[in-house]
Image (tube, rainbow, N blue to C red):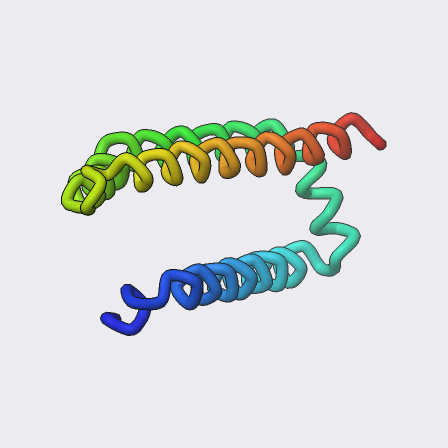
Length: 117
């Protein structure tokens, strides 16, 4: 685990690969349960309101945990830097904005396709 702490890009890559694997497993199980890809897509369309609720709860809980636990720990760790954490806080704010933009773009695309585009 210390190797992943020393190489944050590797940690991000591992997380990305894990997300693709979990997504593939979910689609595979869904296809088996519904009998095929078309039936699975139809089921996703029928349950889109519940999936929206799920995503809102998921994003809300991630934001809550980040603000409550992750951000505080990171700011405490950055405060020990030579510049008092000024550069680290600036980078953190930029990263938070980029993540927010990416999530809005993804959900905007979902909304666009939801409306039948």
